[in-house]
Amino acid sequence: MSKRHVAYVKPEEPSFLKKIKQQAGYKEGPTVDTKREDYGEVADEDLQDTEEEQPTVVVLKPGDLTAEEAAREKDRLKKEEEETPADLSSRILFKAPSTSKTASEDPAHEKVSKRKPAVADRKAKKQKKNKATHVPWREYRRIKGFKI
Image (tube, rainbow, N blue to C red):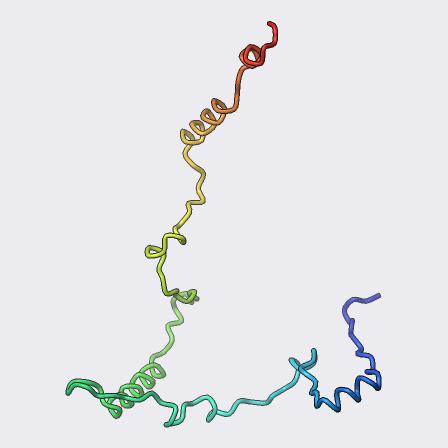
């Protein structure tokens, strides 16, 4: 039996459920096939902000940027970005987005070294562990009251 073409066939609803849903005005929600629907291309006008959706520019001091200057600067930056050629000689690196707190500010995200501790540190831990848990058999028998 092939597992590749497994499909679910929804059985027909009983008539009493259909009547109840019709009386209540129930509408079916999304199904499994909803994600496969094609919604068509998104129009460019939907992607660009209209003038009403643009941020409001407030000039408080004489040196502040006005709305016209902001629009000119925005256009200049867009043209500059389009005109600069991509540097194909260097490697393309994708970086993770930066978080609001850096590692130095947040002590919970300190770097943990993946290296093994130095040999001396490992030996010291091992000796400490052995001293804390190991008791020679003769000493153990003396403590517990066994006859030697």
